[in-house]
Image (cartoon, rainbow, N blue to C red):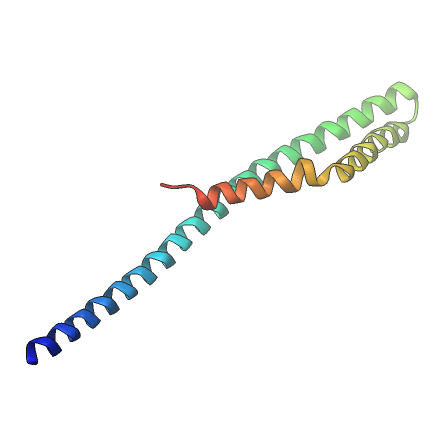
Length: 115
């Protein structure tokens, strides 16, 4: 009877260790996936910020150049702003197809990626 009791205690200890190890592994995998997704998003955000700064400066130059061609500098800014209004209407119309779905797919792919 002592052997049987000892065997059951050993079995419970191993099951407890297995459960603890599995929980720790799940936690570490979640941390790894979260870090991977966040680092990818932050690196893309950094590149996007630099690109936005470039586009901003090019737009100011373009606005001033168009304004100089038309005789009044504010005409150039109105024309560039109108182009951006048109772009924003188009983006709003297709936001799910062009923005939401690709970002969702990117995050899901990163989370489900095997190492």
